[in-house]
Amino acid sequence: MEVLPSDLEILTRIYVAAFLEWPWRELHAPNDVRGRFDEVLRWPETIFFVARDLEGRPIGAGIAFGAFRKKRLCAHHAERVQHALYISELFVDPAHRGRGVCRELVVGLLHAAREVDFEEILVSTSVHQMAIRHLFVHCLGFQEIAEEDYASPRALPDAALPTRRVLMRGFIQE
Image: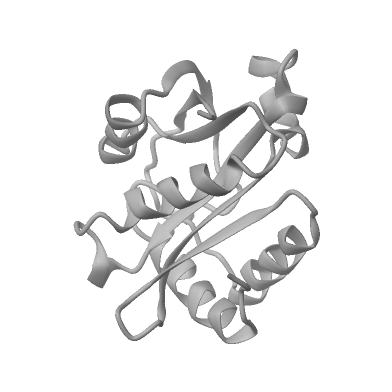
């Protein structure tokens, strides 16, 4: 399904609000977020999967693209990075959380990834995002393959944030 400009406006607001929350506590300018969305949508391998409510309004999104675009992944996955899809973003409107929307987004990304010439999927998240780690590792069979230090350049100045992230890998099933 095509991502409409009106979808991007709504998703930009959801994204900005979601990443103000712990453990991210990041300040994202809406114009910057929209610009990043527009940029990744131009990449030929991008998968931008939108979750919608019963009325068809966007309530979250999952964004994935070639892992080769994330230079920091080469340190952990150099020999396979050309064959990996990287799930860059997962975010859901707070009013719709706890209902399986994130899982729906991930399953949608995995399904779409089967159509693209990638063999595996990488995703990273805060070590404190236990629900996301559980979803990927225990429900979807991903493996945690590395931890890394990462200090967000967008972190709020007064935010005492965890700076460890975990990198997980899963394989695209036929």
